[in-house]
Image 1 (cartoon, helix red, strand yellow):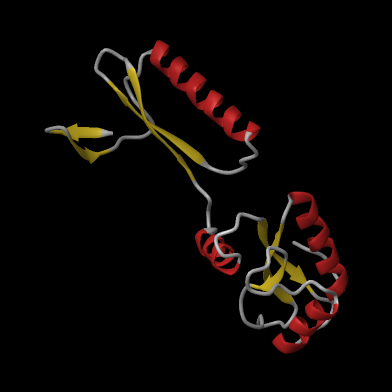
Image 2 (spheres, one colour; image 1 turned 90 degrees about the vertical axis):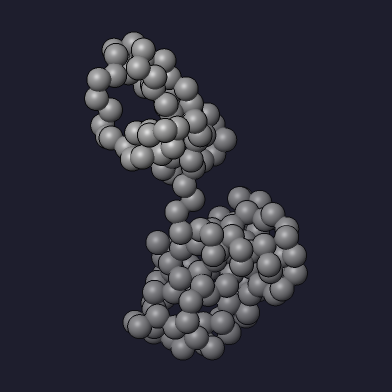
Length: 164
């Protein structure tokens, strides 16, 4: 990060002029952070922002964990469950044949996979009917990750194909 008068003025990447000791320390920090995030179950991009003084001393500024394209789904799950914290996932399931939105929702309901407001389990078509009538985006939610996997397997079976 470039600073001017104590304020952000830009950045330079990759770092240049970093001492070997600082580069090694930076590598150790980012690997330790990635290891901790993985231990906690996180899989995805992250960054470690830091400041490097002229003498090579590193100061961690912040860690930014990216939950790419999940804000809307998280808000929907929170709204539907009254702020509950179920396990949830988004994905695409490809049906064996094209179906209307109503027919797809009917299949979910018949299979006991539909989700009602206030419940913390079920599958919701995430968008209107896809152009091909087969590649349905969905959000699934369940009390546990194990149950979430079970629902996704049942979803694939219900629509006759595989979850992507």
